[in-house]
Length: 277
Length: 191
Ligand code: SF4
Image 1 (cartoon, rainbow over the protein chains, first blue to last red):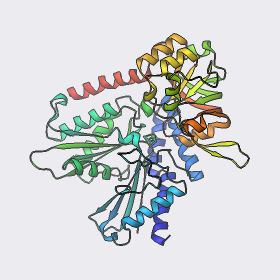
Image 2: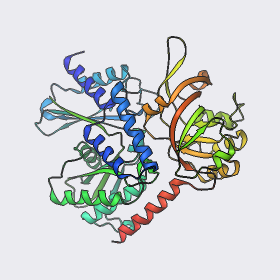
Image 3: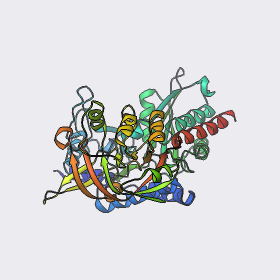
Image 4: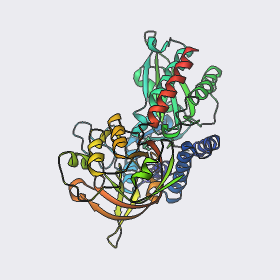
């Protein structure tokens, strides 16, 4: 293995077995909010115990090691190549850091190495930050992601930030606890359908404690988080004060005819890492 | 926290209410898609589920050098896929605890009421904790036929923590939570 491949394989191992600090902190804060002897507390205690066990043993936080999506700064394109990323994924699978988790969509057959055209997903991003970012997103949470086309009469959602709020709250109501709540929402306003899903996932890379640089979006993030947590859905949908840990909103330009709101749901097992190269 | 120990009696199980936290101890068995299909097709079960527990789980199990088994990961799998089979399974076997994630349908809820069974939610994704609670693998059925992830494993568990999501009095916590959150959602949309 080349040095680059080894380093990428280590990134995968870390991401798979160790939840980022900000996510763990948010889970701890959630635990303090929930009532004594509540099912919400039991769930959060179990989750935190699970996080500690996985980190200590270097084993996957969740058995569904998810879809791997890499975001690589454009200036690293010649070092962190798709071939090297693929080699790292295959090596990590071999070591048991990733489950055999990729199936051919037509035949249903398992692709044991987790590597084939389209897997893992790699985006080269237009920045010169020299960073490699990885997110591993499980299927149960991905199933809860949604896209809305505004206006939407059933929600009274027009083509403005109030319409965005309504659509996102509808996504929360739809998801309940089925994507392994408490979750994190990445939202994209605008774009075409494909850009919407890409950007909403990109938002999930943000530190949970950061503040959106766009004041209007920062305000909307806070409002939706507060409102979603008043739904009472709670950890794993069993009731409680913590339905979401964070809401992160970004935007992409759109054509005048379209106004999409895309909501990516990430479960509590928010496995993401970034390294400076 | 209510402690339940195998064999699970009808009286104990009927005393549980949706939302109760429980600690499960003793023998439990796994069964998922192929296991349920086999049963629905009239297959004969190799073991007695009366007063027992059925866990919807596809564990990762490795063989120790001495030939015994060890569970590496063992989180619950989504239960809705077994909806078509579960009412008959509950009625015919006398199983008391169904353990999984995401809840099950109204027919299963009815069967729980009729027979004195409950549905327990284990924490989704918490594979390491669940594996930790499994202290011993005591037997396995259908390993050859169904493969390791679908086989019927017999586990000894200690302090396996779950929440009663569907009780034997017709209450489903999921339905309750969803109805309440829908009310709140409508309220917020009216603003
Ligand atoms: S939704 Fe997340 S926590 Fe739940 S099973 Fe999937 S990967 Fe694991």
